[in-house]
Image (cartoon, rainbow, N blue to C red; front, side):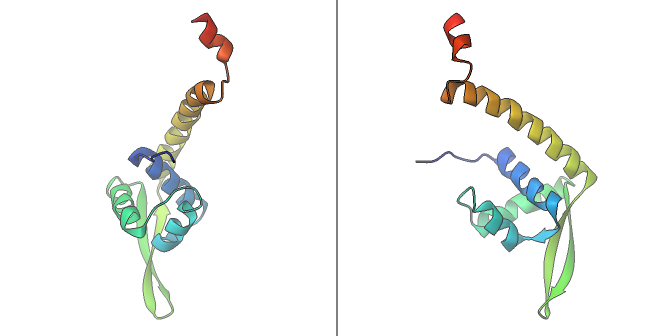
Length: 110
């Protein structure tokens, strides 16, 4: 079994990775695979969407005789990431209250 990842959560995860360091698509995919099953073909539309939304910008850098496209988070991306993180904390708290029986006493009173 597993839990599906929606587009908003995937966007937040990518922004969080890129916030740490400028990086390239393959490296982002490998990092994401620690938590979710994702392919590069799934990631690149996410990267393009974040670019189009002005949350990421790109630059090319030579690596072993070829250009590699790097992604960098923008100010707008950092602001969006902070919003995503706050939404995640709130969402997680609500889910934990049910799934982990945290706050079960509230359920009994309802």
